[in-house]
Length: 145
Image (cartoon, rainbow, N blue to C red; front, top):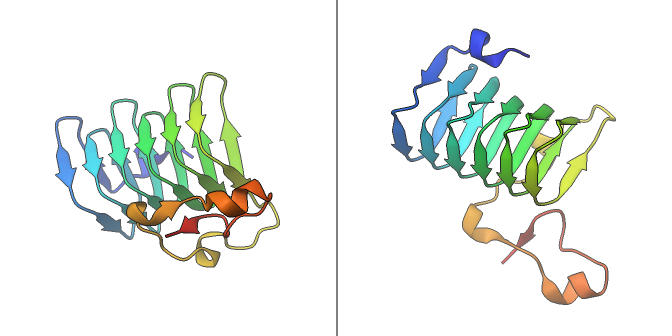
């Protein structure tokens, strides 16, 4: 996927957005985003981009930094410069050598639409139930307070 070529929307390196983004097409981001991204198309998170928020997308290529969960209906591709601090969930996952990822990953190649199965979660609600974790159980993929 060459999201930069397909992107209808481009957010340049010198742009900072405080708030959520919703789009129905593909997007290329090189700036700073402090909020969630919800997109029915594809996304390219450029090497200069930092995102602090959850991302729900069709497919995504990450070259920059994401602090938040990424949920893709199809594919997540983490390039060698990617820094992801959060959980990732997709039908397909590609990880290059050199990626830094702190979080859990769930890959579901069965073809079921992954994003529809996950209820939206605010970053402030994310937690792990320590009591259940000790017993080898979790309160779902994303724990809630």
